[in-house]
Length: 352
Ligand code: FUB
Image (cartoon, rainbow, N blue to C red; front, side, top):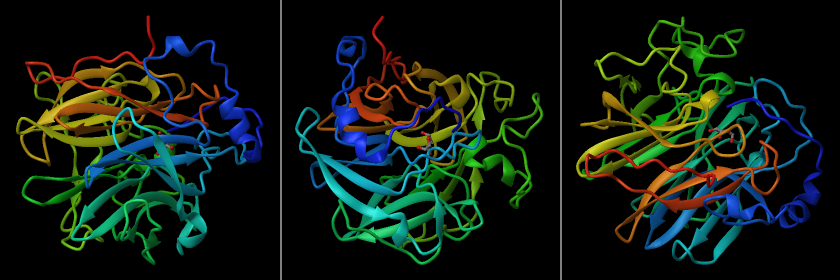
């Protein structure tokens, strides 16, 4: 996560800005924003009780100056979106969790995800603590749209950003997480946080790239159960991807889905703006790199989720169609195809 060209736009002008965005260029986009009343990004979609719920970031113009750490992504609450069907009406269900109700939070509520178990909905979220270190928190609710109540502390042993929670067919749940640069993952490469650590990939160019992390969740869904492991992505020769391989190495925005018994780890390559996939035989991998499956969207960041709805597969993603500004994004959805060889067909979000 990182850098963006911004200009001032007060939060109370969001709705007007979104609704009056230039529509003359609509036709160049593969799909249209799901809502325009607020800015939304990082859509983690799920089907709960036959209905589609989207857990996005809620982008705002906070007036925080832009810098290399992504401080201008200064989000303060979550709104959950819902829809009965892929082409159905999209509802914004209002504030589900606010930063002021998270006892340990400092600033910047980034990309969340959600899960359901035994009558409770779990919202997982990254936010900087009061020492300005990203941690991952959890909040619970009885309804999928909240309101959510945050646990008093972050998940023990958690760090960095972009939690993505996957429940396997045997009922085990895993959290994939991490993001380099503004997501601080590189500052944990020695096992503890280095406050003055690198701002970008900290590994040497010819070393194995930093990887996402995966942890199994405890039965109560509030803690990690056992050791956090590396999500290793291997190249065509069975070697881990290297730091210098910016077109393929993991950057942020992890997601996991299972298709035909295989585990698909998908992610953003960050500064090269691709969505990439890697396939493994277990939730822990290792995962073999398969290729790019979405070309860059408009805007610096690219972040997605993949779900099955009534036998068809969809990708939820974001771009900056409504605002033209990297930190004021809008979520979208389009179809996704698994090809006969198991790889994901390439999607171009901008029509040629
Ligand atoms: O929305 C803030 C950050 O931007 C997310 O955590 C990253 O994945 C990127 O989309």
